[in-house]
Image (cartoon, rainbow, N blue to C red):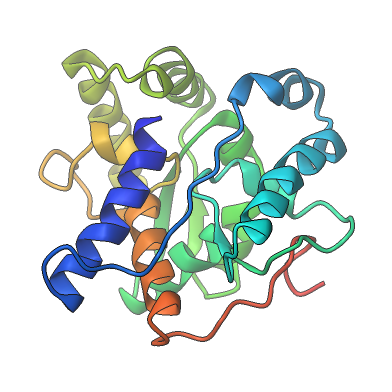
Length: 232
């Protein structure tokens, strides 16, 4: 899908920029169809979703990967669920975004993602641990955001009408005191560019790619999280 491709592309472009033309650390991509997990998401069955996601981590480990990243924010709700340690350590996307919000000295950040992510604990916890407040749109706007994600963005549809809806919602978050907006669904940065957004953006897809590059070239420590609750 476009969001996963964006994360891979950002990683490779960082390599070209930092290491020279056509250079980047080795990267392996594994993707299990979303249809495998959607019934479980609708049922709130995180145990089943975690088991499915662990299969892709197992395959990456067998391919020789040292660590994993998952650009799907929503998936981290299941990855955080208690269970056996994953086969590889991984970077946690909400922690990466939270670190950037803290570096940028943000005080209140709007959160745009799937309904699972906006209603879930990932960003209130990650931002709260860094002294940053997390704000979500109102109920009607959350439904609009979620519908556009699943009806359009995951299918590669990026319309001006939907862009304007997101811009309107971001403007409302600004009125409510937000000084930035976190785009925490993989595809949203393809719809809402920094130039289009009324607020500064925290692009979870590209931030994760840049963090992964830093680990791969030894500039950042290897992650230790292997699923389960953060700090658990």
